[in-house]
Amino acid sequence: MAETNAKFLKNAWYAAIWAHDLPGSTPIAKTFLNEPVVLFRTGDGTPVALEDKCCHRAAPLSVGECESDGIRCGYHGLKFDATGACVEIPGQTQIPPGATVRAYPVVERWNMVWIWMGDAAQADDSTIPNYFWLDDAAWKAANGYIPMQGNYQLLVDNLLDFTHVTYLHKNTLSADPEEAKVPVKVERDERSVAVSRWIFGHDAPPLFAKAGGFDGKVDRWQTTTWLAPSTLAFDVGCAKADTGAVDGDRSEGISIWSMHLITPETDTSTHYHWAYVRNFALDDDKMTEVLHDGAKATFEEDVVMIEAQQERLGGISFDGLIDINADNPPIQMRRIMDDLIAAES
Ligand code: FES
Ligand SMILES: [Fe+2]
Image (cartoon, rainbow, N blue to C red; front, side, top):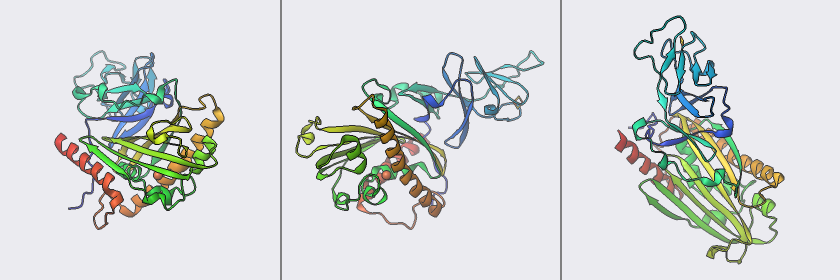
């Protein structure tokens, strides 16, 4: 039977919001995995995530007001602390039993606020992926966020399939049909899929040509590692052809971490946090702008297609559609997720 509703992996860290997009004093309403959540910071800057539904009469807490040690509901003024416990009810001294809202574990790391949507007792922050370059003095990030009207796995599929680059990104990344034929190497384990390939002696894609000032042929590497449930780090770059990049010498080239921190919002909508992180021209604001605008234009091409695809699909099932060889990595990703979700329930 065709699946009509998405099932999500609950016991996992998800990217909730870029740290710089979470100001202290304004509550932010977000939906993750179909659950309404309010995000804010306490007076000392600690991020907090609570169920966005007051336990009194279900008003969204996100329309309330932050205080230094919690949030006050904007309807009848109940106040909740960072653990979700009601600590104040105007006009009465007794707090009734059960006066709490759910608190979700959150951790701020790598300039991202990560949220755990499952059993809080199992939240172990050592399992947050190590993406240190997102917040490291040796690297410079250009970040962005795109709200996408499509199931999150359509975006993961897209990022694990390199063949679409030639067709969907012909204006931003590459228009060379030979590139779509370059084979990829696929490796997987219980929670990850890695896809990689080298393209030797081709033109630099327009964005890299601009960023690296290449005028001749380049050798180009693309490696992506997807980690369950839905984050991907791409090690991409290119170097002047035949200068030893394939053997590890990247001195004649440029390297970029292309980051994709993807979080389901609902069955058919997604929070897409992306970043382009470089280790060259760190103080060059113009370079940050070029990479930001180039990355944004590229990722929006994906989002436009995925939203159109979601529209045609209606739900989340691929019933009646065919597979091609290039679907191997996405299919492996989906199998791993199905297994993890089945193991959880
Ligand atoms: S609904 Fe929140 S205080 Fe009444
Ligand atoms: Fe793409």
